Length: 317
Image 1 (cartoon, rainbow, N blue to C red):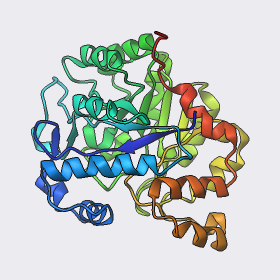
Image 2: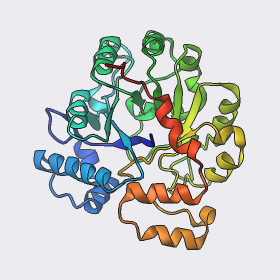
Image 3: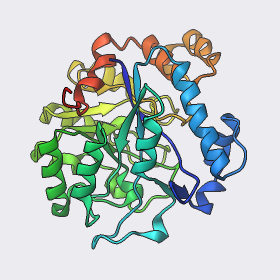
Image 4: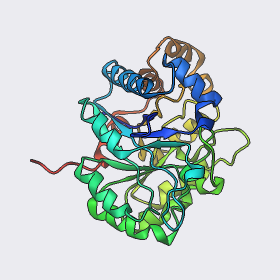
């Protein structure tokens, strides 16, 4: 199967999660709403966004499936919900229900490891068909290297479910702790037996941020179960990494496909050439545009199919 491991959905109703007023009024969110043809910020907008996602999946025959990601709220070290830092919250049960409505949608759980019920929630999500767990440490506030996470990692390893963890910068959402962007913080789950996918390969999201691509490359050499997804690498601040990660055979063998939909997809002319970049601009479907760019870059069949091999598989029957 060809699977996009990194597709987002937002909830706007309190029953399904929600978004802060700060995020709703932000320029990136307003742009994405405009681009997707969405109006308002209520349950009807939430339903329309869900339909846009389904239509986009239907219009992307190059993909057999996509992992739709929940997004847990930040939690404090003692396990309490961190209301003040919660700007995006998409509940697991909402994504479970959504994925039941489309044959190409796979459930990507999000569970904060500081939650008092973290392991129990992991078990519930796995029973509901979760194929991976997604974290964004610099926004959700978990330190992947903290010993408090060990019981959660041990449970993940036992259930054979991978961790997709954001690495590098992030400016679409407010940051809690920017130092949590470093790929090296993911060594503890690797030591616990968890397969780890470093989202964005450690790239920066703005030119002023720390770039962790060298650290990502080093970890590809040091850890057998360490991979990186190509989500959002078609942004100008991240696309510089393509040459480094594609030309290195060892690193290339660790790449998996991800788009970061609905984040914008801008063809990187400096990497793929002006003619190819111009051609992909005519593709209005951002999932397909992302695929076409990576096809033009020469990513091979192993790349396109590797992600599916890392996902947790449902037992037969």
